[in-house]
Image 1: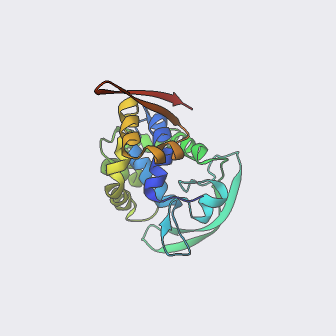
Image 2: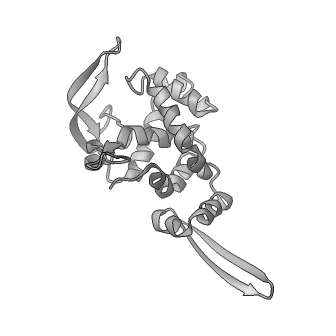
Image 3: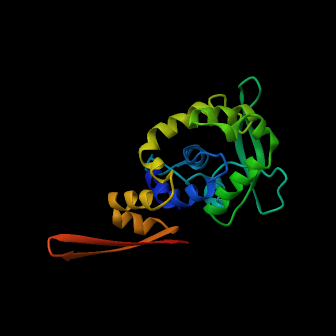
Length: 213
């Protein structure tokens, strides 16, 4: 399944906000990387999140290879850059495979937290997406010379709707629900909101329930 960037955020934003809490990983960084690493070009010429062959066939949304991995795998050619910035094709590279997008998100966080080089590079102390992107690049997450700039560029285009989940709770949930209630209920597995509006005299009572998956 593939998504527009906004659809991806609406579907997984609540889950991501809960999952990154307390890890030092910024939601905007994670979402931007998922977009970069999983997007693919559709027949109509539009780029969609989750449309890459790797994402479609293995639910791998972060381009994580098989380093120290005992789970399912998926092999595919991938573009890399050498230390001089020259691009080459890594033939039949081994990537991790997951049962769901949620599993990919959780393993991305586990992968970063279990590799000391990311802590040494300051990834988990970063205060902004730009700082975190620079630290990820410095730690060797990707070989593309402009990788950190790509993360920041993608984030600049999504932050208005991506950041609404950054403080997970009723306020963030209700803001998203108020913006587009039908889309919210349809797209989010993590949060179910039931609302009923009752007119009592001249006032309106609003009742809501938040249920975590």
